[in-house]
Length: 447
Image (tube, rainbow, N blue to C red; front, side, top):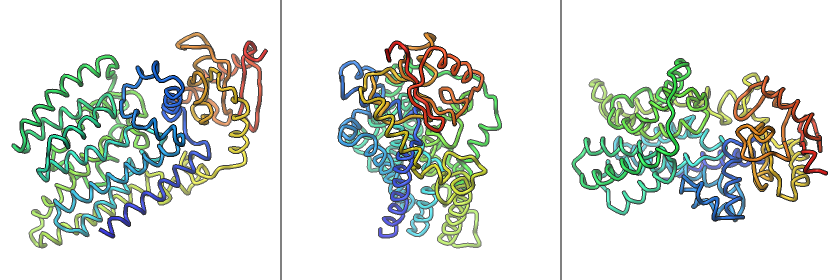
């Protein structure tokens, strides 16, 4: 118990400090940190209209914390929820492997898993609930400790986390029914409910699938998910079945962020991969007759830990990784990005002064976001709001950072960026500039 607590503390402390430093150094983005902060603030100011946009009911749990201290408590909560998922991984590993040391090694391998670090440091997303809630589903199923209150609480929380979750749960309940006859009526009841609710919920939002190209980055994405646990997950395919829908969604998606290990989309794969790998370890022990089962499990667990550390050093955003220390990778997680600078301080103070009225329609560049902008009447991603096309309102304040040249929406498009700069120079006036960071105001709003 003491070793497990130390492992959790050694993860929770540094990742929380890094999240705080990223927030202090203005390293969070409009997508999706700014979007949800603006929604939370707007709800506190006028709760009735914004309530209709909350298609993820889990956000109702965040409102009291946001009202108490803004986004910082939510960032710490995000890290805490992910840390708790490691406790479930440890419990499951102890039950399956029957060895506390091997369980600690697997838990440490999980805490080194790159998607676990990215979900804590890559802005703020409801996806951070996935490891804990899916972990509870798998753990209670394995222990045969399902009760109606437990099943109801976990499944409905998962339903509230993200609009695509019902399809994942459908596959989970089908395979759970296949694996065990324990409490079949509960599985079938929830399978029926989520089949209906999933279809109703996904219909308004739509799931758009496009092309399988480019194939190599998607193959690399899945390689980076399965390789840290030595591909042992494939030995228990029914435990992987719930991620079939996210797998298809990634495979036939043209948006690069959906098949990037450094975004929130990877976290939904983690628990099925990790738990199925844990179940695969005793299978490996049966293939090593020269070793006792006890020794085979320890050797396999140690190999997984070593491989996980190697992938952590290559891919993760932590102080143990290459991108944290070497500037040549041009990473958003280089150590210098965690240190608040004089420039960050001047920009933050100036934005507070320029947006003191809190009644502007703001178009902000994705990486130029600051929390004060969430407290405005309307918040749009740059360059939306500069023209009438695809905009719900015309911006009267524009915030950009020319050091991030070419960034529009959540991608790089230098041609569009240059054309938007011409519109800014023609239709807006420059209110403030410091070291390439600019705030424009429309002539109508300023005079």
